[in-house]
Image (cartoon, rainbow, N blue to C red; front, side):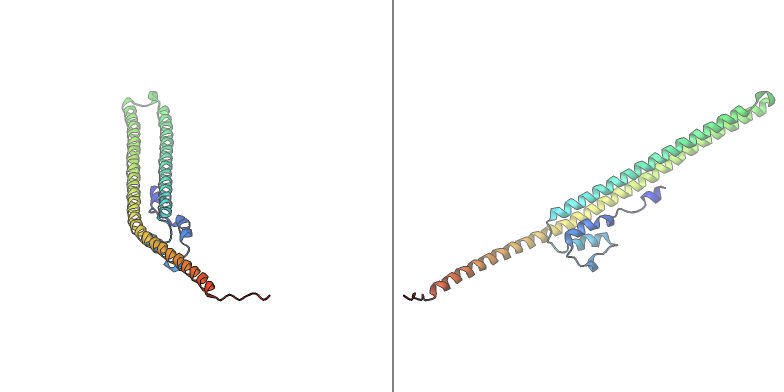
Amino acid sequence: KIEETLSSEISFAKDRSELESMREEIPQEKRLENDEKAWIGTLMSSPTVEPNRYNQKFQQMIRKKRTDFQKKVRKLRDDFTKEERSNRKDFMKKAKEKCEQIDPKSVERKALNERYRELDQERKDFFSDQRERRKNFESELNAKSKDFYMETRERQREFNEQMRLYRKRYNDWKKEQDKAKKEQREMNKGSSSSGFQNMNNVPSTPLEP
């Protein structure tokens, strides 16, 4: 049950549409659906989106993945505990019935003691088995949790590295954009001044009486 519920690695496949909507200009063939690392790198290949927007969205995705994982862990543990209690209740009920079926008057003392020892051993085996199952369950659950958080930290580290490079590209791109806009304004201003100057050089035509 644990393997089935928690076996998949952390993935952002379901959340991609939100980030991709911020970068619709990226050609479809560049979006590598099965490679998360390449996907993040491709998403940030053209620095035209303010970096904090990517960072905020990524952190939201991480928090959602963590919350969903924790909910699954709690449900697995709750389900296991319920099954454990149900099995214990059934065992104790059957053990009681077996004891009540013994008639001390119709059984020799030696056989009676042997039967009680058998029932006691069944009880010990049952609770020993329950403890072992609980130990294995918690061990597997802890291993899956450890893997999940290690994977999450690795994804965060990879994203931070990509974001560091992206911020530099974005800042360089922004400077170029600001420079181009400034040059365009100066060109427009110069063209406007030149136009007015040319109008002043046109000889005036006297009005006819």
